[in-house]
Amino acid sequence: MPADNTANLITAARHRHELARAKAIRALRELDQAGGRITFEIVARTAGISRSWLYSQPDIRDQVQQLRDANRGTSAPRVPAGQRASGTSLMHRLEAANDRNRQLTKENQQLRRQLAEALGQRRTAGKGSPFGNDPALPAKP
Image (cartoon, rainbow, N blue to C red):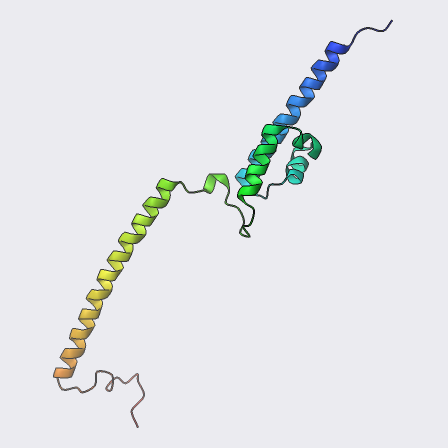
């Protein structure tokens, strides 16, 4: 009568299952961090496991679907997870852009006033048209 190997078979199956889970989770993380496209086929190929096994794992299937659906309809490449901006970071960038915009608007107004004053002084100095005496411009016919 052969020896009962049931316990060893169960242990080996459990080990294969945990190894496949670890490979799938690692593949998902790598693909997400790299900003790559995420589908069941790509995850299975990257992890070296079968697609049917992925579909049979509810938690991993949900993660794949969530990441896949989050990027559906975007033609631009995904931004890797490590490079994504947080809400706080975006607010700081917006505030900095608004401050710079106000500064440039103020500088633009100041330069326009200076130009208007220079043109007015040139006109009152009797030089005629501010643009007519410039040697870089073609003479009027």
